[in-house]
Image (cartoon, rainbow, N blue to C red):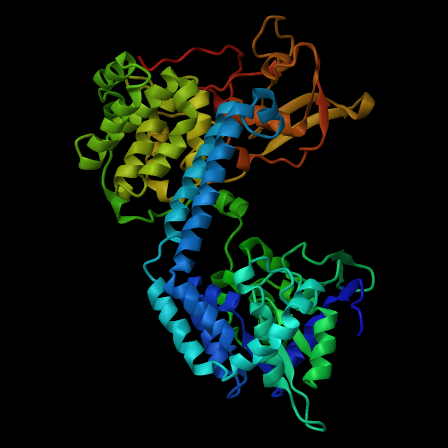
Length: 619
């Protein structure tokens, strides 16, 4: 028996594997975990896998009888659907726990240190993200196509199942099974369930019997395709090398570069007179097939399978150099950061958005007094029922969406602790209930009060806390109509802002001029936001615009670049993901009387020459 090396040569491994995949002497075995995965896989990816199986040389793809038996048990017991529902429910439960923990732990200073504009902005982003995940869950747990998927997999199994005499295998295991299990002889010694503790061994015995050749015959190779992650089948080296100098953890990007357990290889060669043995995950198999396509210059036949088998953020990072070339846009998903920073389309993506909305003056004149009074006069226990009635009226068309949005804005300003961070998640919850036009109307109703007073006149200083939360929604291109309409309102009112929502999500340039100081700190001399200087000096000792006061630092005059950019995002209504953060890890200090000038929609660039903040109320 030969033990595996501690460092695996990945390019060599891939070359050897692809050679076996192309060999006419290779046989491919599908275990239970793989068959179960095929049932829950998307139709496009499953189709590619099934086509690959059927296009192999006749008889080379095989399903052990015991794997077919276990699949039958899972299908008749509806275990696939139950497992999906259970996984989704557990994920959502953990997300709810995280949301509660985030709300409990969120501290204004810590949120700003980590690049969030404020505590409320952080909580709003958490709630919005979780609300979106709950919408994603509706897609993931849908079981409407499971029966059709099961039929396709059953057809495959019926065409490729072995004819093993299972009774002979069972009789043999009555004598040897307990010994194998107790002495950690692979496979199956990690199976803890007594009811099926020898299932893997039966599958292994079927493979040995099917592969066995007579002496002097050409040896056959075996590729077992499995999603079983237990190490009683495989030997996973701690490190992988791509060249002589570069080494990294074997599983740090989900490659699962594994060899069969050495004792399995020994048994395979001795008992079956087998050639090469592989136990591969379908994700690695897809990577190898893609690698072959690129190396030979042929079109990929596994793009959907590849995308489904890997997390989307891992696809561009597959270890082999040939696989590092960009995968076609059809097979990859843009990262969250790329999606959020992409420009807003110049044309509306939805036919709904061609419908008209009220003017800014009409929207701000919409009545909300009766609803606000009913809410404020209700007891805390009854307030959720009041809100639920609004939701019912909104869904039935009795409550105009723009007025509902205005109501959300007023609640957020009146009771920020309860409502401000909830706005994005409320919008997300309503997505499946309303048309695109109505959803955009709600967002417009929430957004306009950030910049306009109750008479429809532009505020000199926008309502920053509500604005920083609302701007989270601008990254959602389905809300294009609301923000495009808002941009029209702002342009008609000659509003100046460092960042103009609805005009395209482009990076906001921030230039920091600082001199080197002691202890690695840089002393701020000037800050420019979109070319406008925002750093003021000689501010009175009690000025709330001093940096020390804005940072809530008392007498400590230092901060990280991340904290500084978070403060600038909050003060000047800049989406945090669009702020240049190249200086995140720098540390800054400032003169004791230094501070920031105010946001001012009537000044050039939206930056005031003064430093006085004004209060804004809806009423």
